[in-house]
Image 1 (tube, rainbow, N blue to C red):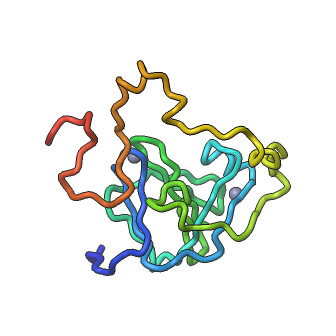
Image 2 (image 1 turned 180 degrees about the vertical axis):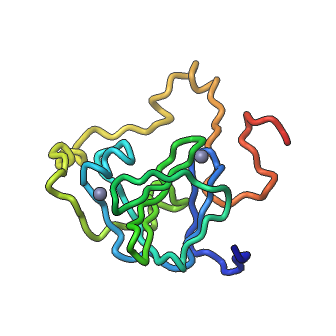
Amino acid sequence: MTRETRKPPLTGGCQCGAVRYALYAPPHNVHICHCRMCQKAVGGPFAALAPVRHTDFAWTRGTPATFASSSLALRDFCRDCGTPLSFRYLDSETCSVTIGSLDCPQEVRPETQYGVESRIDWLDGVNALPRKVMESEMPATRKAKRVGYQHPDHDTGPDWRPPHAPPR
Ligand SMILES: [Zn+2]
Ligand SMILES: [Zn+2]
């Protein structure tokens, strides 16, 4: 692999930080997919996916594990923490990263819904549910013990380690 020198407009990675990636062009046809395979793959009601051409994508730290969810498609995820990272058809020029694994998911807005035959109907009511802030809901006793092990939302150097990991 040649060393990448382009500055990526978008970066992302898994929850533990073992796998990081970069997009070197803005994604196109950003979408959510309600299909049953995407529901299983992300463990949620739908997958939110940002496609880019393979030539505009690179893994920049670590190597993901890969599951073939059908004879047509592969899904990459972190073997250490399980974060779903990408979806790609074997015969496509693009791969799609999961919007939630991007460092700036707010900046990548879906334009289309796919797999609507499997759409979960309670999604219609989600916007009307009561809204609560995480911090205010956490009991003080739990808050006092909390230490985050999640990788920060930006690239880190080769010396970065999760706070609980022994130094190398
Ligand atoms: Zn990970
Ligand atoms: Zn799908």
